[in-house]
Amino acid sequence: MIDKRPFNGLGGADHGWLKARHHFSFASFHDPRRMGWGALRVWNDDEIAPRSGFPPHPHADMEIITYVRDGAITHQDSLGNKGRTEAGDVQVMSAGTGIRHAEYNLEDETTRIFQIWIEPKTRGAAPAWGARPFPKADRAGRFVTLASGLPGDDEALPIRTDARVAGATIKAGETAEYQLAPDRHAYLVPAVGAVEVNGVRLDARDGAAITQESVLRITALEDAEVVLVDAA
Image (cartoon, rainbow, N blue to C red; front, top):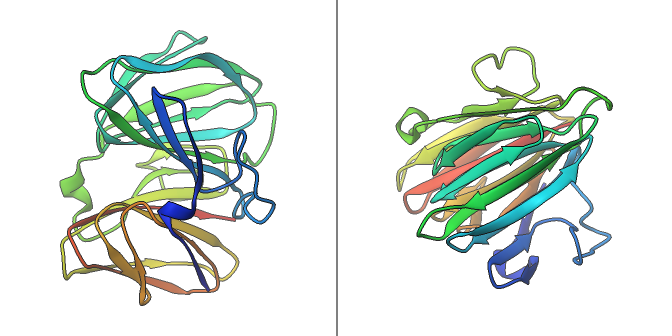
């Protein structure tokens, strides 16, 4: 089953400095049919104006993954962590018992990110933050795990949940595959380019909620960059 969610039909808000689209209910956007997908709770498509950003604010008991599509995001938090994450790279924050953080676009260009929230397996752990580069060339034609709480995903950024975040870059006309267990929920978004997922067309920034598909065959109709969450 593949439930296509066109970008133009997503909820959202325009705050001037922030243009946001929400694949699931978030903030003032509420759709009782879209409260999450398995353990996946939030997938926000954010455009952050130059020299602006999110001032310090708290989180608790959530795994928050930031995938930078364009530009860069600069992170600061109450644990003393600081870091700048560039396009194609990933940062993760395990909010745990509680953390305050700020996210700023300190660049002279618009920064575009996917921000993904996944429910943790257990609550009350110590908060943590981490980031690392994931060169797009390393993902050419195949999925690479970016963040994961699943056994065996030792090269990925760790998250405390029964989920995996993966990415692939696929040239036009080529196909990448992803194996999906029968009890899992996948959510897939092309960050760039149009693709077909088991014959269903997705344009850039469309979403697809997927279940009961044992193999996902993603064929690029244009040069594409794809992000996928595989969650319980």
